[in-house]
Length: 174
Image (cartoon, rainbow, N blue to C red):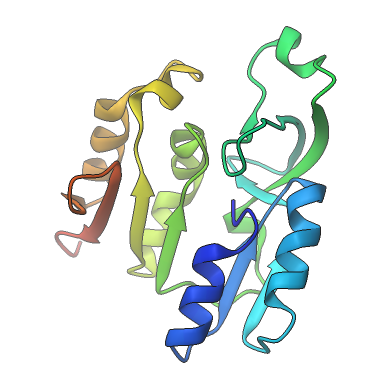
């Protein structure tokens, strides 16, 4: 999710490119909209990317940027949640294929990738992923699940500095 657009604004200020930013939580989408108002090359969308077109509960945490898709029915019933839309990247036919994709979805990365990697690979998209085992546990996944999925789709990973972020590049062409 784009959250309030910190990275979106940074890229918009420093690079000439078209940016599509996706934020499913309405509160943060409103802030994202204000923060990107002056950038004609930024297109914002009030939905998230998932493994299919669906509606889900998103848990709104006290820490900005830590919202996450509810996994259990008890989470879905929390007062600090809202229903949001998720779309499959494969169904976004009106958007140009991306050159670079940043995915930071608080452990939901596998769910985004499982239905998107073939599309990203076909279009030779570079990926920047946050991979955090603690967040992945929420969805019964771990870092190795992500690595296997990426490797199966011809991506190699390189850790960015000493962080949970990884640069993922096509390692071989089919």
